[in-house]
Length: 287
Length: 312
Image (tube, rainbow over all chains, first blue to last red; front, side, top):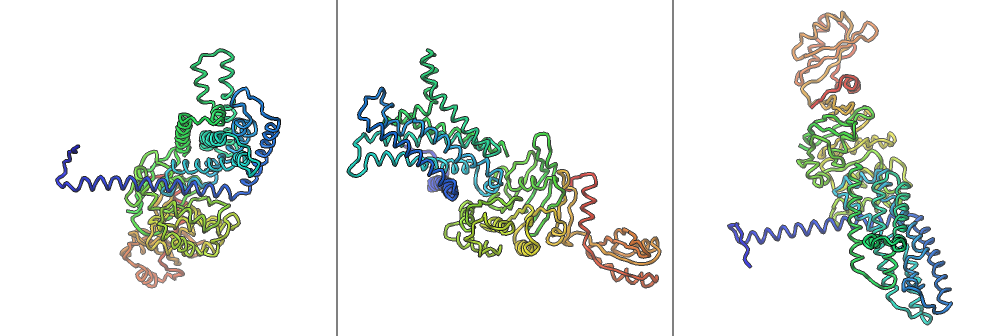
């Protein structure tokens, strides 16, 4: 393939394109490095606060309580579940009441101060008067929030891993429950954290942001129940299908059975990017 | 030109916080921005730092436009906001390291740069202290050290001495005066004495407008002389106006037999020997004869209470 170039010096176009690529690559590297710097700083800031450990302890206790129920159910012997998603093992990393309500508390607590509090304290101004763009700050903080949420859900994963791999006493169940559950929680957390970021970017005060996030998550929970209700009320399949797509707790149920749907992951990633874009626009309009 | 602001306007809904502000700061030195509360100083500074975009008008910092080249602008400047916004749970060293990373200070020079800023602000001993446990003044110094990171050409300081004790204020003035040798410093303050002490030029803002531009460094076209003398006021006034180089004479009474005259003179004319000679010849006893800087306070009051006008 030949490329027509109008430059007199043949060596220059290649050199120029190289410079362009190097420059673009360098810029990408710098942008990524800034995001990583902000994310690492935010994670460290989160774990510098005693409240982070109190939250982790509370999450561990709730996970332990949930785990004791799982052990009780498993000790009752093999009962044929109505659906695969109703299997106690699938439920453990699925939309069970303990995990759902824990996420509904952890996400607002982690995200509420990310922008609203920093803007109130003047840190936002300080951040944006260095050579950092708002989208880098939002992305870095979002990454930190997501990691903090996943860390707080780790006790559930550790419980299931212990059940599977405890030396001499491990229960030989399908690894898909663990892998699917972990991917499901990580994926759903992406969208939930992005919702939290939008709320903290829109609201003036952290408390208002947390209330807005909880409200949004309650809305998502209600939406998760909608498809079944709509089926009962014989609403058209198109609407049921639409409700299915936004019912993220139902997605978690699907993941926890070990079914990893790449389309669902892509959907949540796309949704998160869109929500982060809204958060960026909200911070700009607030300024 | 280090800072060029042209016809800056910033509106928040119906409110016009800044209305047609324009000025030029050509190079190194300290320029003060003074004005009553709500004059629009902080909004102006925020537009200079590219944190806020002007509704109309433009700002160029070191040749870069704050709207189109905001990233380059931010690389050129260090900004100390009015509120000391720091992370209370972090240690001073960790915080400065984070800020140095954000300011793209290369890894191999980062520690040296942090050390330099800590030393410049006299807080080397605070490196391992938690920020939340520092006093207000110490936090302000940490914020100033952050501003100095990466050695920006332009420093914008919003009420930098707020919360500092007198000794710290003195040290801070010394530090800023040293920096002014090769940095452009624009600082906003409420304290006129501070502006008089360290600024070579002062911009006065009121109701969103720039109402005066005072040269305090004797770099302008004029200088002032003060004379306190006893005698017939009209005769003295007339005699002073005949002196070569005297452009204007303002007279006030001191409340007794003495009269006070403020003479506005051409910069390269030292009229004091001639004034003394005339007074001696006419038999008017002199109590004071000195060269003086324009009184900032009186100019400030005059500017703020006069009808707002655009100075540039």
